[in-house]
Image 1 (cartoon, rainbow, N blue to C red):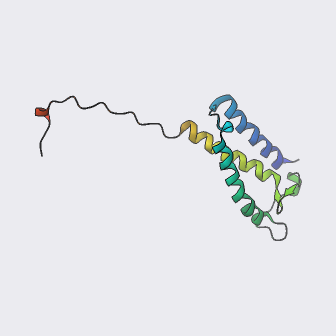
Image 2 (cartoon, rainbow, N blue to C red):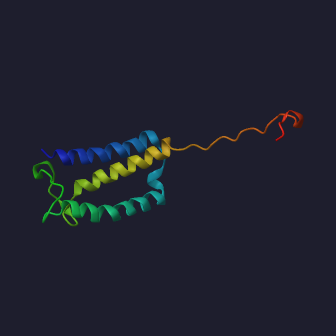
Image 3 (tube, one colour):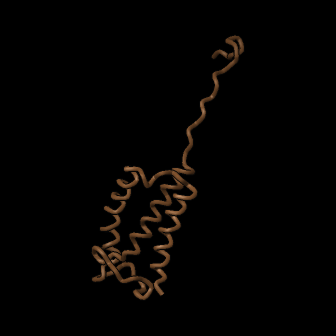
Length: 118
């Protein structure tokens, strides 16, 4: 069974569904998101390529659990799906649950005589 492939595809489907049906941040429509994904890809390719190169792999995969498609530098295509899911989910959580603007505190209502002097 292509277990690694199934989980890779499932991770993409779940993350996209979370955005479209629950989070609704609109992140897929922003240029900033796609630029961030391009930056991630720019670092993922050399690092993942070095880790998974068939000539001297550091990370080993069970070939029967994946499609066997590798692009560029022997990177399993499933790794790109997992990378997309992890980075996108992190961004969605940050946008949805991240810092909120701090409410301004109302000005003090005490009179000058009630204020302490140094």
